Amino acid sequence: MRIITKRIKQCAVIIMSIAIVIAMSFTMTQSNIYAASRKAPATKITSTKVYNGYQAKVTWKKVKKASSYTVAYTDGRTKKTKTKKVKSNKCIVTCGFNNTCKIKVKVNKKGYRSSSYSKAKTVKTGEDKSFDVIYKANGGVGESHLTSASIYRDSADKKIASYTLSNRTCKFTKEGYEFICWNTKADGSGKRLDEDSKISNTLAPAGGTVILYAQWAKWHVIKYHANGGKELHPANDEENSGSRSLELCIDNSNYTKEGYVVYAWNTKADGTGVQYNNMDLVDTTKLNDTDFDLYAMWTPKNYRIKYNANGGKGVKTNHSYTCSLTSSTYKPAYGITYPHISLKYKTETGKVMGMSGKYWVTPSLYFDSKWNYENITTSGKVTEIHNIKTKNLLYSKDVFGNKLKNKQTLKTPDQYFLYDEAQNLDKNEFSKSGSTFAGWNTKADGSGTSYKDCESVSKLSSKDGGTVRLYAQWKAN
Image (cartoon, rainbow, N blue to C red; front, side):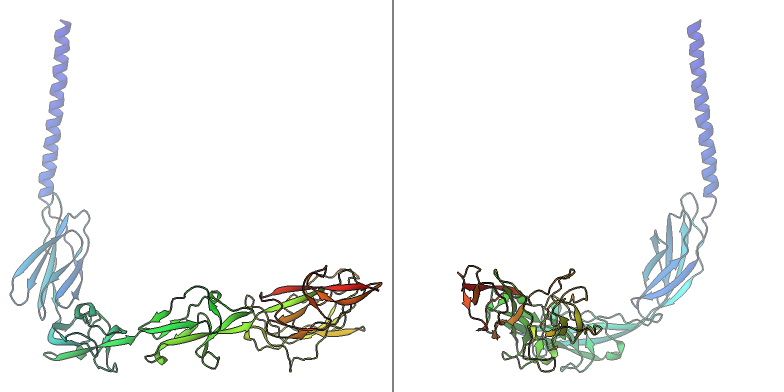
């Protein structure tokens, strides 16, 4: 009995499930039948535009959940209508030149009947002008190239849409030159047309012929010469074609000459030509058909001599020069023509009393136009010095940039040289009790190179910014 009851309950559940499925299917079928009886919402064309002269580009309003759109367009000449189904709300249709095209759109939506067509829009395509284009090598190698082209003007946006050929197609060549463009005149004085550029309809009347001449640019080779120095590594000569200017890219460190450094380049080995610096622009239009030679311009390196009392004592107080700012016998460093610093300071305290003029620096620094220091009126011994390299000249420092402490005496000034310039060594002012000054030496123990007091010297160091130390030598009385 229990088994029968259980079976009856199972059958009842199955029957109820079947009934629910049938009911749902009936409801869905009714919904589909209802939807299929409805039309999809219509759309509206929002813009039309001539495209490439012989086509029409049409855009319409999007419809939510539309599966596709059907575009119908009627040819104005043949009166034939074609259709095109697209997913997006825009498309391009081909109508041909000198024609009209009537366009309309309807909406397709899943579960719905297609909408009615939108209100039609008429597009008038561009005017066709056929003509011949002859391409000539103009001094180059290659057969003249004849093409038949079509130029037209869009009736809507007035754009010209026919293009010149690339020289890759014509394959013209000229030794030592590079093709740069086409021109309606052989000498380049006419209308310039770049490769694949649009041709204006004013150049090609209907049924006419346009002749385009290849335009060539000379390859200019820029060669660098060490000019008395040495080239550490073979440099690549720079080549230029087509552009009106070339930016120089020179590694000055690749050129060396003992005691000298490259400060510029010149078109003449003796420096009388046009001078250029790294990153300057060379006007290639003035080079004609010749190569371009640049010669290194050399300027002597600078170094200084530091004097050491080597057991003696005293501070040199009469370190002065006879040259002035207006008539200096000291050669400017690195081709700079600025005058040197004229500086006054108190030898007892190292305090700056006044300064004027402009200073010279090494190439790694920049130039200041002028430093003006307030003149300080004070009594005491005053001497002048120039050739100062540091710009840290403040009242709280001595002329060499050293911070001053209370009652600190001025350090012995260094003497500055250019590599190829001879100067007399400064007169010794050191002293040592029980000894007589016997000259200078590059070694404190006298084992180096010896120099007499006030001896004329030059080329003591070929290192730019180098320092030579001279030690006082003493002979016991």
